[in-house]
Length: 163
Image (cartoon, rainbow, N blue to C red; front, side):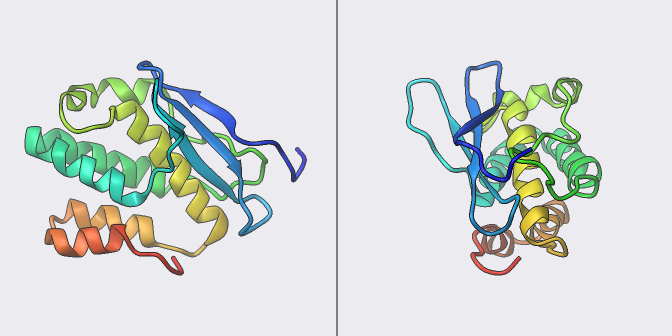
């Protein structure tokens, strides 16, 4: 694949019509920016903080299943994905089968589980592409899983610096 590509490039469309895009970034050869657009709304850029706040809302509704989702994100996504070596990047572990086991969480929060799994994976691939030894996302989800105080978790989620 070429190192230059037009953006935004559609990576995935959720069942509710949310389109998830990537566009070329400038931090590294394979860097990209994740964006999404819900039907009838403008293009937005998701951040770690958005995912964590949504997980807190899901946790209030179903703590056990939310913790299982976070375990899945840590074990099956964060610890498995590799830096991107293609432009645009490709999803490495997501499968629609992963949605079913957590779908009851769609009743809580702002985002669907489908959205969280796809966007979460792309954000993790992006981090590993730009910071191969970075652990910010892993530490963030572990802090949430360990039920650290909300200040610590949100501070980690909103950190803007070297990963």
